[in-house]
Amino acid sequence: MRSLLLLVLGVTLAACSLDPRHTGTPSLPLPTQFTVDPRFVLLNETPQHAAPWWQDLHDADLDALEQQLQGNQDLIAQLHHVEQAQALLQGQQATLWPQLDLAAGASNQQLSRTRATYYPGFPYRYTDQQLSLALAWEPDVFGRLHDEIRIAHSLWRADEDDLRALRLSLQAELAQAYIGLLADHQMQPLLQAQVADSRRYAELVRSDFDHGATVISAVDAAASAADAEDQDLDQLNTDIALQEHAIALLLGRAAGSFQPQLAAQLPSVQLRDRLPASVLARRPDVARARHLLQAAEAQIGLARTAYFPRFQLSAGAGFESGAPQDLFDVPSELWSLGASSLVTLFDAGQRKALNAQARAAYEERVARYRQSALNALREAEDARHRLASSLTRRDLQVHRSQLADEQAAQASFAVQAGMASDLELLQARMQARQSRIALIQLQSLSLSDDIAWLVAID
Image (cartoon, rainbow, N blue to C red; front, side, top):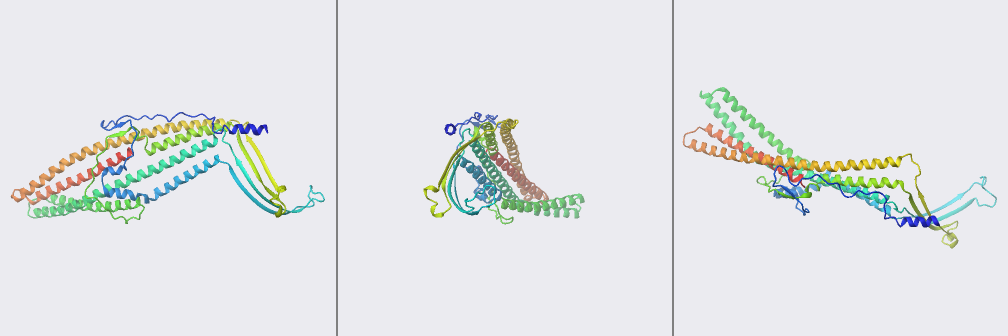
């Protein structure tokens, strides 16, 4: 009875854990602004709920595509993986509660009358019927079960971060494919016109050669240029088909089943230049590293509880009788009440080694957490540098394209005035068209860098 009272006293300490706790999450080496552009600063404020990042591109067709991404099979698989982790957490939480079992059985037995313990008059054939309830409970005196729950909870959150990271990656991949497809469709009529003009140009050069006005090398160069334009158009058509297949796969559809709904022109982006200070720390990869760090911290507490006893309370009650009609009579009642404890007295240093392993794993997770934040910062800085560079090249190409268009217009006036040949007009027109194609390519690249930046800070 005294041991039972001591055990009950221990149960009152169930909410107390003797394992050491680390205070807070380690700090992260994050700056207050980005080096490439001081205007892009990190504000010391709580982030507000924002619209999905791709809506900064202001493209209704892209928005409609992103809404269909839930059909992606990789995304569905990861979602079910998260559900498994959540079920494991719920199962671990159930260990805090008592377990109640109902048992029922009936047997008809015959014992050997020549066994060593048989004595005359003892029944050797009998029927036994039982009905009982059994209650078992492990009080969490030293926090072992709570630490296992903390570990399961942190691992579940880490799996959710993996799901968020996968969703973000697929969203970015879909947006990149959409921008690439939109740019290819805008370049397609330009390249078709370029092929027609290059062939006409080759014919005029051949005519000049036939009249002795040029050399054979000019004819060969014009023919090679026309062939190159043909190859570029063929490659563009192939790229369009491959982009459509990639989008179909991202949406969980069969290749070739995607019918594109495309905007008339490439979208424009107005990027936000003032962001919450936690914008990088809340990224999925950094959040995952933080949750794994929390699991490692709980693992230290779990290893520490191995030094303390484990307690078990049990109780049972029911009926047992050899005759069914007597099963629920008072003499057939049975019950039991018990308590037990277990503590390891000697293990040759095994628990000490497990504690050292848990602490080393925690320090490893601290380093990986900080490294994930540094990597997030690097990706954001890289995205800003690439975006700044692509924007500069795009603006320069806008100027070049405008000059080429002006030269083509002047060549057209010159032909009408009899001051220039059709060859010069074709050459100026093809140059202007090539500048527009280059501009579309740079606009597409700039938008890809916009997407990389938006994803890096989401």
